[in-house]
Each structure stands twice: as C-alpha cells, then as structure tokens.
Image 1 (cartoon, rainbow, N blue to C red):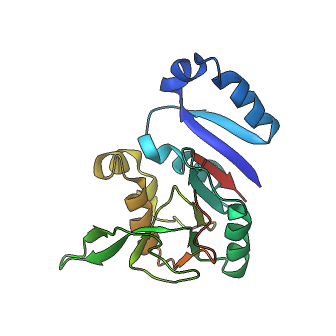
Image 2: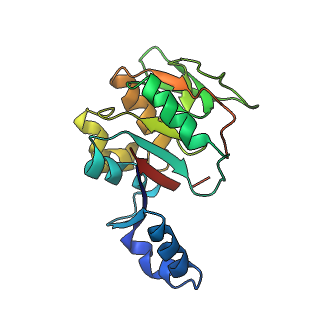
Image 3: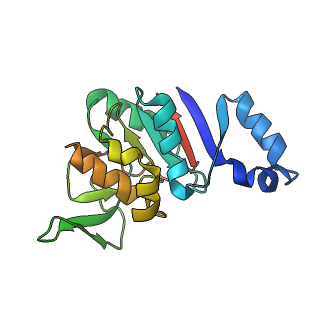
Length: 193
C-alpha cells in the first residue's frame, strides 16, 4: 500500500512558502506518503491521472484532502475490494444518472445522505470520488481517450468524477457502494494497493 499526494509544479513556490507546509510534507513522507510534483495544473484530474500512468496495474483509491475520513474507512474499502476485485467500490454517491435519447449522461444531484445503501450495486448512482473515497481496480480505464489530457481538460476541466464515471461505464464496470456507507469524512490522496 502506498500513498501519493499529487500536486502541480506551477503551485510549488506558493505551497512551499507557507511555514507549515514543509514540516507537514516531511511528516507525510515519514508516514510513507510519496509527494510527486506534476507538470501542469490539471485541476481535479491531478489526483488520478498521473497515478494511473505510474501505477496503472494496481488498485487505486482516490479521496479528498479536505475531509476527515472515519476510522476504518480504508480497511472497509480494501475488504470490499478483496470480495469484489473487479468492482469499483465507492463510499457514497453524489447523484443519480439517466441518459437522454442520444446516450448523453444526465445527472440529477440528490439532496440527503446516505444516497446509497451498504453493498448496493447500481449503474445509475454516480460515485463521489473524493469522499469518502472511490477504489478503482487495476485496469479500470482501458480506453485511450480517458488519458487524453486535451480532451478531458476541454470536456470536463473541473469535474473529474463525471469523466471517471463515464469511462467506467464504457468499460462496463460494476459500481458497488462500500459495505459501510458511513465511512466518511478526508485526505486529496491517491492510495495505490
């Protein structure tokens, strides 16, 4: 298990000029978190895309850094992955999805949590990739268009969740809510199993 924090080189000076950041980065490194500076600001895509390029043959968990996860959330995700190794395991859903006559995704944000039930399998609930995390099994994204930086920055520049969801559908993946949907709430880290 590795943890990787991706950030972009463009923000290096701003990030490292804060007095609290360098000790925090050193502390994270001592805990096994690998901080890698990526060229170019790809906004929310900077979590998963570089991680997949480097660790595409591993299961990857994407979580946000601005929410604290509940104790045991990682164990839940890993245990569920071990039981369902080809499924995308997600902590919670952020919306229901339908399709228009042309096959385009229509997303309906739904108020109220939990939206998903523990262990629920559905192609119509869009996972929230950030919190409480989404586990993508190895080889989830095989369509070369998924990695086309120009394409994802023009089609979904600020919505990596929709981009990931659409291509997971293209790959025919099964979406399974974690067996404990209350595992939420922290860290923009991609963990590689």
